[in-house]
Image (spheres, rainbow, N blue to C red):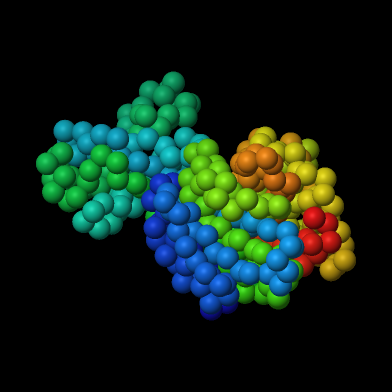
Length: 348
């Protein structure tokens, strides 16, 4: 299966934070042929291990989070409408009228996010963003009892109903590219990685979107000497975005984080990534000042500290129902991470 096919499968899978099972099962299947062992920890992180050639070589942890932002049912109204809470950072402005899937024990239910109709809103209401707690999900139930018979329960997760699509030779659209693109890169890195001195742990982490939780416990178990998070980054090449706000651009290669809200990249890791890019003629972009954080922020603080960095693929409209990215950027991310792991024993 080629890289785009893997990305498509991962993007279409449901993995709202705390319910990453579908993604984990796919990743286990795709990673197993290229590693010595695959296991799951008690909370659901997927940990793959590839043994290095030298026992005294550094241990490298590369991580991509399996979860996606979404919604969760918090109440079923008398008339059958579902109130929800947001899981992860979602802008209220992108929710209205979105098609969604409610994942119940009885199977998937399709629905739409609704609100008071615009035709009967007053002038003040029409000018305001409708907040999430004023919205609801309509699954077509006539009342609460029917919704419950359909399988809806408080706590059911809700994902966006978006199907992967190819827009051009290299540009694709899909759900949850943050961070299914990182997951696809992680798998492809294992596929392409030659025998190296380092012991390599490739981790699909859980619950990144609500506090980087999976990476925290995975790094504690692994005790790596070097950590690299694989993620998606904001592509600032759309109208209304200044270069200072988001300098990364789609089509210009992988993004190497210098600093974000959770991490100042360790100088040795930054040097490793930049040197590896230059030695292999891989175009790259540097990024700083981003308000978000990645799994690297928690890997870095594990035990007595882990030098860590981030390699991201630029994508438009992340944390929304549909995002867009250039597959060539993701493939270059793979090349960069493979080169960095090959060179890691020279730096650590």
